[in-house]
Each structure stands twice: as C-alpha cells, then as structure tokens.
Length: 148
Image 1 (cartoon, one colour):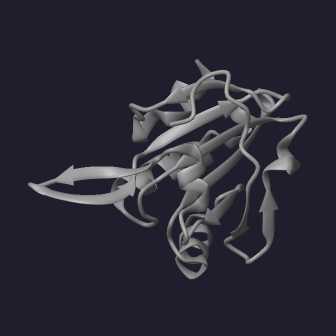
Image 2 (cartoon, one colour):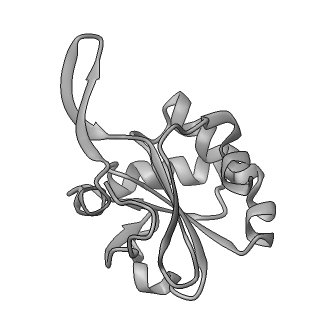
C-alpha cells in the first residue's frame, strides 16, 4: 500500500460522466483521494455524504476530493446523481488505480475470502507527496479525520 512520503501515482480513469480524470490535474493542489468498496452501500454512502456535507470546509483548507471504486460508470453516475456529490467519482472497473495505491487486497467476511477494495483515504500535498494514509476510516465523521 502507498505510504506517507510516496509520490502520487500517475493514473487516469473515467468519472461518473465518462470524462477522463488524470492524476496530473491535481498537481499544485492538495488532494483527498478516498477508495470505497461499493457505491450505494451503507458505509460507502455515509462516507461519501459526510465528505459532501463538509465539502466547503475541505475546499477552504485547499483540498480537492476524488472518490474511487471498482463500480461501473453507470453505478457511479447513479450514486453521484442520487446524492449530488460536488466531487468526481472514478469508475476503476479494471482496478488499475486500486492496484497502484495497494488497496485491492484479500478480504475476509463471514468466513469467506475474496479480493476487494480496502476502504482507505490518502492525502497529498501540492507537490503530489502523500502526507497521510487513513486506514481506519470513520465513515460517519471522515471529514473530521481529514481536517484534524
């Protein structure tokens, strides 16, 4: 998994509207990139809505926000539109971005093992250097974890 002091990996992906988003667009800006397992599930909805509700506070601290999951564009679009998120969601269907960040991992749930996205948030400074990795995401108060 990406660590503090690592550089922002170069990536591109399609957002909820099918528009290409590239990591280089965020150089010169602070970036919050959050990886979530599945759009429109309770934990992911709580996390994304908390970031949306506190969007102005995050923007005032200079942060851009980007969400990433392995959902198809159609699912990202429904999720984005349903809650009117003020930030982009990337559909990483082939899991290339998840793999670059190291969040595509073996998970265990109810005695079953499977590959999936480990909910993780990365903060980057204006130079594209990782300043924090939040692995224990509090979905209901995630913006507080970022703004602390």
